[in-house]
Every structure is written in C-alpha cells, then in structure tokens.
Length: 130
Length: 131
Image (tube, rainbow over all chains, first blue to last red):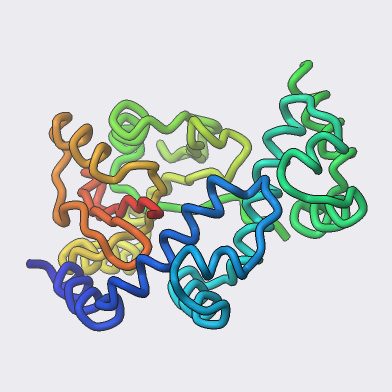
C-alpha cells in the first residue's frame, strides 16, 4: 500500500465514516440534479431526507463545501448555458431551468459567467455558425 | 484573470501525447515548436473543448528539482492532478483493459469515488466521480 492509499484509507475511516450523513448530502444533491427545474423549498428537501432544514444545510455544506441553495443555482446556470447554446430564448431558458424571474436570472447569470444571458447566447450562436 | 492552463510534467512529450490522446481520449489543441525539440503542447477534453487546457511540459528534463519532486510524488503514490469522469468504475475497467496500471482501485470516499493510475510519463493521475 502506497503512502497515498494509506492516507486515503485513514481519511475514509476518520472524516468520511458517517455514511448516514454522507447519504443525506449525496441524496439531496441527486434530487437537486434531477429536480432543479422545479420550485424547490428547503422544507421539502429536509422532509425527503427525514431531517431538519438546519441539519440538512450543515451536512450538505460539510461534504460539498457549498450550501444546497448555492449548488442549485450553479446547476441551473450550467443547464441554462446548455439551453442558450442550443438556441433557446432567454425567457424560455429562464423558466425551463427553474427561475421564476427573468431579472434575477439575468443578474445571477451575469454574476456567474461574466456576461448577461442575451450576450452569452449571441456569442455562442455566432461561434456555432462559423 | 482566467484559469486557462493546467500543467503536467512529462519525461517524453511525444509519448505523453500518444497516451493522453489515444488512451485517455483528450484532443490536441496547440502544438508549437519551442526549440531544442521542446513543444508548447496542450490538450483539451473532448467534452469541454473551450475549457482549460492541459499543458504537457518537459520540465523534468530541464530542471532537476522538477524531476526530484515528480519522482517523490510517484514513489508515494500521490496524484499530480485529477480529472473528472461520470463513472469511475467504468473508466477503471476500460483503461485496465487497455493495459493502464492502477495503484488505487475505485474507492468511495464521502461524496466522491476516486481511483489512481500511472500515466507512463512519470505521474500518478486520479480520476474522480462525483456521487
């Protein structure tokens, strides 16, 4: 066994030993991956894992390094990029990935990618035409 | 500022190019001569061709400390870097069938499954699947 595999084994036994907590985090992430386009509430996410909202946020952040809310926003922006690239309009994209306000979608999109969705769409569309 | 290049030290750039494209499946993006047989050689992922480029740099052949550090990591089994895959077990099986040597079988650890192989160019590389 190498130095590295020894360290990984130790880490698994110490820091990653609570499989119940890990499953709460992983199951929540998987739920977000498949239901990102719906109106998701923390109450529902917590109920699905039979835990409290506060515990869920703590556990998710502990293992993924970001909160469920931050993860959901990243997921929605990632999906929005794909749909804009495929030619979907800004409004259609906004609602189809789960945002309910074009304004907040545009602001979040710009904050995460550096450009507003309309500019992103034009840039990728022009590129695909070349 | 943007992160555009991530570099990996390799002993033989041509051998590395063959391994990283033919076995791992990356695509060559830039290949420019730098004199003395050295090349500015970068790769991208097939699935993210506008994404960060992987620079295969011949540093260990020209800068002794780079060689020493690379050898030390290799001996300890520590990965130089890691790449993300959808299914670590499937990649482990695919690459093993192509003769790639693994020092760590797919291992579940928290929210990831990780596995480590030898890139035949002086490095251990870790593959990570996010669960």
